[in-house]
Length: 312
Length: 160
Image (tube, chains in turn blue, red):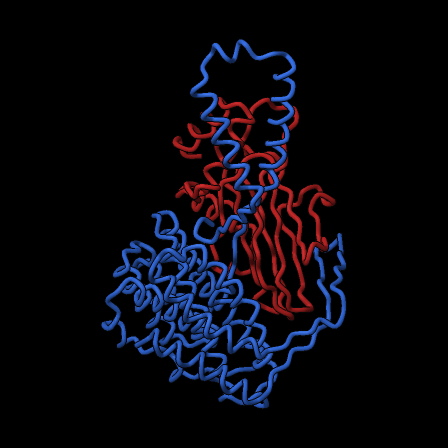
């Protein structure tokens, strides 16, 4: 995805770029006369360099990042045995507060996460309410035609079919991000993803009430988001020249400091077992994840602080 | 395929392989490309997403334009207890798409062993950040360089 990519530009890549530019420049300025004067030996050497260039060029790789989407985060919350609590959601009434691109994008992600969470817990009325809010905010952000009347109608007609509902939500989310990407607004798309991610994290952490003992599965899910935060920061850094993104990097670095108290120890090597008949690979490994209870409280408070800032 | 896209492929074929690679890479390095064009998102939606069924698409949009021999890496955290389907698909004109799942340079899966399968399922019994390394293979019989959209989509088993 365009807005996710980050090229690992090593010194060798930079050198390569210079070489290519010099090569192109040389071709342009020297003209045919010099070309004809090229000795056979030079041609052989040149071909060898070109072949090496080709090989080196192929080694430059594009890096994309994928955050857990609001839908995946909601699935993780539900599987961890959490319950639905409407009071945790961002009120639809707050929509009038969002007047900047940053606030609109963050809250489009936040409402999308609330929408996914509601749908996973079969909250029909809330799901439709949040789909309408997401639609309104998307339109204000200039993301047009992502949710139309037909989508809302399809959602209403299939409220008892969770898989169809999830499909509509994932399609809407994908369309919004694709639209932004296609229209050279990739940085805005990353803001939407950041909003969705923090809301999922907020919903999960608030449901633990700050206790590591309340729901250990849910706590583990939250702590492992340390890995996703690294991904999010990589994504944001791709657009660090954007002032809004630079501000978000600062905010998420503070969260990273709170996550630094989480210790992940991989206690076994990773192994993969492939079942060729079922076309299924199982990825296995063991690890231990730890945090001190008081550090968990601090982590939850930091998450809440960031989320409050975003929805205000 | 939209007429505009056909034209683009045709135009690409006129370029010599090495020049095309050079231009693409300079574009990458200077940030002009890669741009997942509207056609690319259309391709991902219409031709790649259906292959996720019966898994539910996670909603993330990942598609870019690659030429022969080029590689893209998608970094993603997989979560213990989840079952995923990865669909890695290029437009019909492209040679087979090679994809591998890596963790710290350890190869966990390589679709070259399975006839370049475009989709594969994974059960995560651990939480780890993996790399999905995707390369457009090179057609040694062709004198022209092919390029086009490649989509990487992730589905989640809703029943697990």
